Length: 48
Image (cartoon, rainbow, N blue to C red):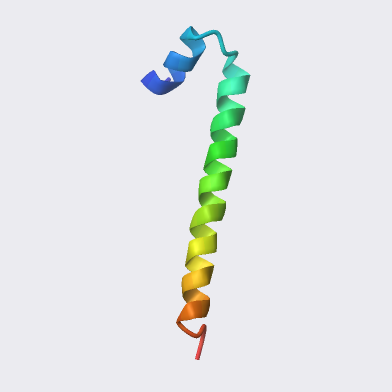
């Protein structure tokens, strides 16, 4: 496991809580990245 993951387990978080919260963060980061990509796509005029 990654040291960052281990840090949260040492704080007392169950492993499933750590994993699910990282999944949520990954989903939010993906949504933000797709939103930025789509906004730039629309700004440039889309497909010609």
